[in-house]
Amino acid sequence: MPRRQNKSVVRGEPVTVLVDGQEVMAHGGESVATVLLASGISVFNRTRKGRPRGPFCNMGTCFECQVLIARPGSSRFEWRRACLQQVQPAMKIRTGELISSADFSGN
Amino acid sequence: MSLTTYDVGVVGGGLVGCATAFYLSKAGAKVVLLERGQLNRGASGRNAGSLHFQLEHRLIQDIDAETEQLEYYVGLALLAIKLWRSIDSDLDTDTQLGMHGGLMIAETDAEIELAERKQRIEKSQGLQVELLSGEEARSLAPYLSRRVRAALHCPDEGHCNPRLVTLAYASQAQAAGVQIIPGAAVTHLHRDSNGWKIGYSATSSTTETVRCTSVLNAAGVWAPQIARLAHLHLPLYPVALMMSVTERVKPFVGHLIQHVGRRLSLKQNEDGNVLIGGGWTGRLREEGGNWSSSMDADIQYESLQGNLKTATDIVPEVGALRLLRTWTGSTAITADQLPVLGEMSEAPGFYVAAGGSGFTYGPVYAKLMSELMLTGRSTYPITPFSPSRFRGLNAFMARPD
Image 1 (cartoon, rainbow over the protein chains, first blue to last red):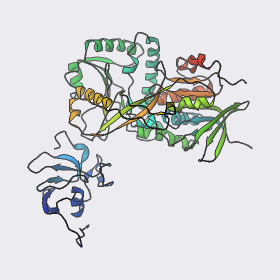
Image 2 (image 1 turned 45 degrees about the horizontal axis):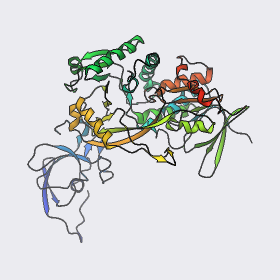
Image 3 (image 1 turned 135 degrees about the vertical axis):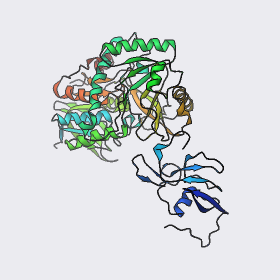
C-alpha cells in the first residue's frame, strides 16, 4: 500500500474529501490522483468492458485517470482527470465507475 | 546481381495498399509492399471511419453535370457494402464495424430538393435510400434537432475503426506471404524489358532494389511524387481535412450523420466518443515552393468553430460534451473529385489507385485493382476512373521504349 513520505517534507494544510462515500485526509495542493493512490485506490475507472484503468501519463494527456468529481456543495458529478484536479475541502469523488456509462449530467 | 522478383510491388502502406496486397496474395501473386514510414499513418489512419454509401455532399454540388459518373459511383457503393459486411470474417478480426444506417440531413427547401434529385440517382442504381420527413427522422433518431426538416436514410451506412482495418489487412497479407517493408522510401522507378525495378532507401545510407512485373502506386497524398519517379504527371492535389473527437459518453447516436448542404459528418463509436468532421479544411504547409509532404497540416480555428456549430445545430446534445482533441489529415483529390484507378498506358505495368473517399471505398478499389492487375479485367468496370482521362498530360512524358 503506498504511503506518503513525511521525512523532510512540508505539506499543505489538511483537507478532508469524500472518496466513494468515505472521508479521506489529504493535503492542500495535492492532486486527486495523489490522494487516491495514497489511500490505496488504483482503479480510477473502468472501460466499457469493465477493465480497470488508472493514471498513466500523470500529465493530463492520456485521460486514463478520469474519476467522477462533484465540487463542494454540488451534487453534480463530472468526469475529470484526477492528475490535473487539485483537492478541495468537501470535494466528492467516485472511483471505479464505467466511463462510457456517463450521461450528459454526469450522473 | 540477382534481385528478388515479385509479381507486384505496392508503394504505400495505407488502406488501399495493404488491402490490394492482401487480395493479390490471396489470388496467388507474390507481393512486396514498401511503406516509407509506418503503416496506416496517413489519411487511412486519421479519418473518422465513415462508411458513407450515399453520394456525399462534395459530389452533389454540381449534380446535373455529373449524373452519369455519379450513377456509376453508386454502383460501386453496392459492391462496397457487400465487402464491408463481410470484412470481419474475411480478415478474421473485430474491426468495430457498425452498419446500422445513415441519415443525410436537409434543413432548407433547396437542400430538400437536392436530396430528392440525389435520391433518384441513387435509387436508379439500386442503392437503398429513403427520404424521411423531419418527424420520421426524429422518431428514428431522437437526438436530431428540430431544424432537421428531412433526412435521406440509407440503412447500410455506418462506421468502422480506421486504426484497425488497415492493420488487419496487413496482418492477413503477411500471413498470406506478402513482404511488408516499413521505413522503405521509394527513390527510383525504372522500367526495362523485364518489367520494373524499384529502388528504396533501406536505411539513411543504403538503398535496396527489387524487381516487379507490375507496380501499384497507392501512396495517397504522395502518389504524384511516386508517379514523378516514373516521369509521369498524376494530377492529384493535396487537401487537408480536420477531425475532432469528444469524451466518451453513453450511446445516444446510432447512425452516421451527414448533411446535404453543409459540411458535417458525425457518429459515435463503440467506446462512446463522438467523432466530428465533414470536410472542414486544415491549412497545408508549404516547403520549397511546393505543398509540404512531410509536415502535417495545421488546424484552422475558424474551421473548428464552423464544424462544431454545424454539429451542435443538428445534434444539440453534442454541445454538452468536452472536446478531447482535433487533428488534421491530408488526402489527395482530382479535379473531377473522382478516384484514379487503373494502368497508366504510358508506362505499362504502372498502376495507380488513389483519390476518392479512400476509406469507404478502399476495400472495393483494392479488390477491383487486384483483379485488373492479375487478369486485365475487373468484375465491375473501373474504366471511367482510368488515368487515361489524363492522357493529354502525359503525351510528352513517357520515356521512349
